[in-house]
Length: 426
Image 1 (cartoon, rainbow, N blue to C red):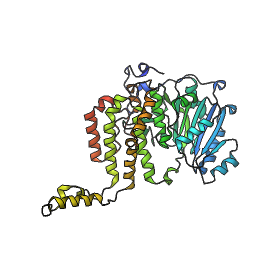
Image 2: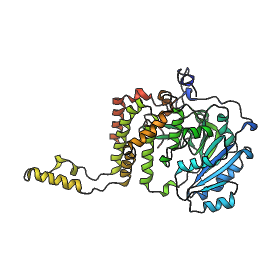
Image 3: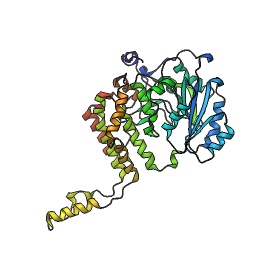
Image 4: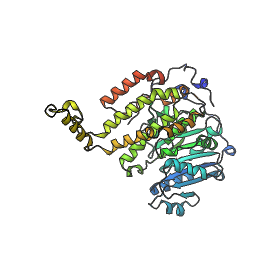
């Protein structure tokens, strides 16, 4: 565990460059790792109807500059029906293949692959829609081998290499993850190794023992934000994650999620950041952020619902309550309450997402207790890793006003410190 005072406790002696990263997050990598010292690595790839990606991915992995006797490739298939399984068996027979009868999700599938790995020193998780450079894996595992950190993440470029896809991760205070550098040119500031809040699950490595001890990916997340939760949890439990810009891969952006109904994606993308916050903030800080977090979630729900007419809900707009007296008023209220209103399904998804926490309070308190019992690092040591804690994700006037008001009322500026990066692109 790295002491807070080694890199957070002392103010920077130089001014930070405009648009750059805080100096205290930067790291100085050690010497290159000799081939003889490279660990046994298991690369776990998850697949769901991604047959069109497999050839490019495995062709690049076949070219890795890594000892073949210390490299294991595992593909976990989540019930594909596009010929992926047949292609793997015919074209990539050396890859260990595990086929699920149903889609168990990204988190559970990755954990499954990790369990099946044969005594790895390092676990590596890679999206199926990636291709990697020859030195990608050697560079990715080197900081772990040198004991500089427990987890690492790559520099992810677009498929054509013209812009960045991810230069590590950041987050706002209510848990919404940020892929730093998304769609920006690969500038010099993105070529500096540094500490990061979480390793992107699309291209990451982690010490196998640490992965097991910290519980792996949270399978209740199913998909999305499981890497944010894992990375945050690693920091809470005394470990570090580093961004390794010399480990380069190229991302093709799979269309798997686009085949699912929007409300299904919306539910987990709203729910999982809330759950990550609930689990990983310490007691004092959770009491400070939970109210604002839920208030902002409610405002976003209102925005998504598309309520056609609020007037029918408001008693001040009743035309003439006097003639029939209180009885008629009550009758109208009862009729309005019992009638149906058409709202958008994505708005209902938001309600379900929040209720997954509120409706299972004791369960999530127990899950939270499991994380907090293993705390080895204070929140104050972690907050600068957020990089943009006050990022306001909506441009709607009422939402912006609410976030400003909540920030002032709860003292979140003082608690979390200022944003350290420009506003990420949406």
